[in-house]
Image (cartoon, helix red, strand yellow):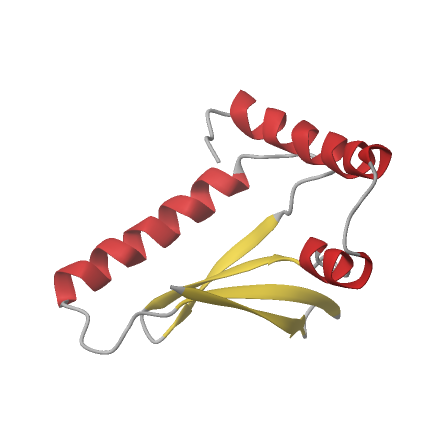
Amino acid sequence: MGAVWLAHDEVLNRAIAAKQMLLPPGTADDEAEQARQRVLHEARVAARICHANAITIFDVADDGGEPVLIMEYLSCRTLAHVLAERGHLSPAEVARIGAPVAAALAAAHAQGVVH
């Protein structure tokens, strides 16, 4: 229902991620509006989270009436990529990766966000 692109902030000269809602053709107007409101709600909720291990929401842009979340870009390999390369992770590696993720989720939960 959405796509994330690597983009460039021309004003601040930095890489950013732009997340845009993509609705299937023929989506009813009321469903499209509900989806727009969910995206805006997601942005407001995510903007409350301030943690070193959580992506920062910088702004919500408008693209022809559609909200686009402008977010911090994190340059890294995905877990899926690592697993495809290596096949598995040791328990120690899982703990090393999982601990910061758990810390970010705890920060989100402290703000009333359920992920």
